[in-house]
Image (cartoon, rainbow, N blue to C red; front, side):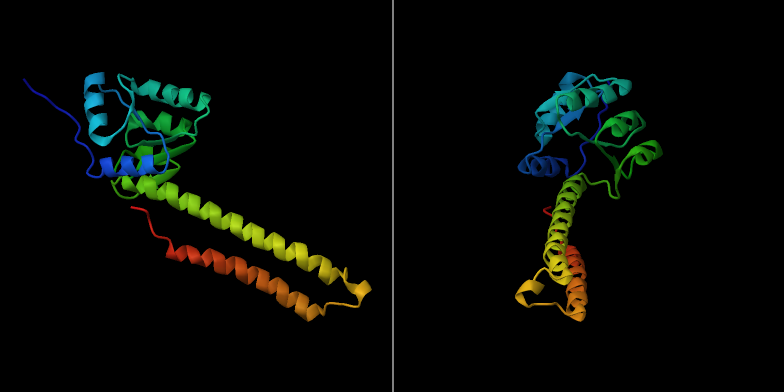
Length: 190
């Protein structure tokens, strides 16, 4: 009797736990039989298992999840995963995987470490927060500064010197750039 099985990636359990802490649902879509899939899923803490899925059907399973209103991030490393990576909202290819998976993925993990999925999601959220903050400050400065520079306060005797208006505009850009530079201090949750 010969038995063969894929081994779990070293930090899979920790990555799945962190994804659950972030409020993310995890699914395992695999061609393995149900018994093997359940055993592996139990080891890492995945509760949603789609087993006995043929390679060409992984894409269909991603579509089904999307039709249910879910935003799907697919993580894969093989030729069989490429169509599902392309169909998903965000395809995350493991850098140690096949060239086809890497070409298809939107995000490529440089290391063979699934914890980087958590970091990618967290860093994306952090970047989006910074973009929103920068937009707020840019609109705030322009919303207040342009009417004052245009002379809206002139009827009450206040006229803004063009040098001060130019300085305020420059300060707007400096505040946005400074806020963006704070991203340099980002620390991963893992």
